[in-house]
Image (cartoon, rainbow, N blue to C red; front, side, top):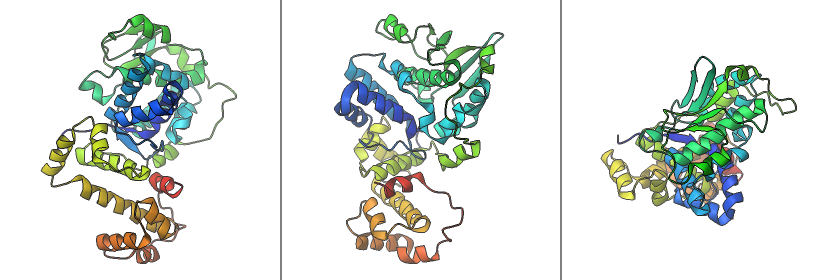
Length: 356
């Protein structure tokens, strides 16, 4: 149905939001989030996914407000891969840089809804990179610059904080502003109009050991994949559901914002959903009930707390809506639920809502 919507984990925005706040202040950061159709209190948690286009719009707005078209290239200075969740820690806790790159390939599904990692070898070099799905539709200079910083930050866990690649590939044309401004931030050879965003690494660099003194959590690939909770679909309906999940978690459900985050018009979203016999309001109700059911079955939260976290004015209205949707009251569903000591996967959205 309709076009596919590539998605990125919302945790990728964590460093970008902190960076934007430092560069633009809280007001400028909120404006960038609004321009991207993202909630002002976006949860940077594993399990949440947002449209890739919304991340590009956020970075574009931040660069426009700052007056620096190369702003996103500086994001690498603020990127802490290990702080992005279990998948980020798993990547940088490889024994060697080569092992770390293999780990990134393993857990790429935690980062995005498609396979974007690129590792290519020549006689003397290894190209380590990424290809954003939206780049196939139109150039994404800000995504490309931010991704370059992200990739550099991984290598620096092994090569040191001052390391720069011998060469960088960007899958965009040269910027309209002076390329020298970008080269001041990335003091290396920059190749434009490449097939993917990439860093040139001498092969001997792959044997570098992880720098001593950096903390180790012992996270495994299974930990990283469990934290993902599910693999989001790029189908239009599923992408809209992912947006609704984030909006419910922040208490800001809005069709206009959802359309902005998809980089589409409201009427386009409505028409696409209507063609499948869907509408945004009913989808929101269904997703809200799915989250409610998980709360009731898998947590010991009081029903009043669950009702409030999902936007209901009181427990009575919540229970009535729950019974209408499932044919049973919340208390009965909880009573019949599996014992709490069973290994039931936890939804990170539940964790976020329960502490709001």
